[in-house]
Image (cartoon, rainbow, N blue to C red; front, side, top):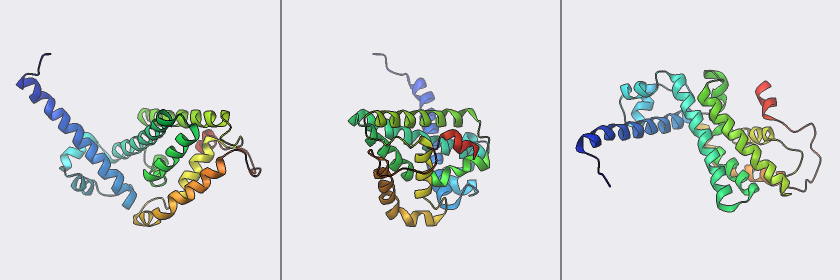
Length: 214
């Protein structure tokens, strides 16, 4: 096996450092957007990430680019949580539960409103992350329904709305004070999704298209 030359290692090292810095910026931004909202100064994000302002702007030319990256990374991680649960257990409803609780831990309720208020909703990166999440959750719900685990009269939109509503408030330091209630109430909601249904739901199942049009 051929080993890398010193010159090759010198080239590779900044790339690894740059990737770590980018991850630190995204993590710091996510935390501060949750705590203070999307208008938090970028120099404060740089300070929390432990990098210089120039490093932030080298990775993200403007605030919209950083907010978009944070939202995409959150959607990717919630999708990965559901995928891992499905791979580990083969239980579709357990994968749905993992997705719901992971979405709450990622502060979906604080971050998702930024999609409609701060940048182009049709950006290709955002569309790709959203499509992956929607297809995954939709597929898991269909598997759970086919297995007799999930009631027939709910849609992906119902799940997304419930997660956002039950893990509020949307942003600010107060959102951290309700953590002790969030997962308890989400589990009550999830138990209500199980088949057989105990009652008939009013209206029709909410789709993701319904949410986009509202």
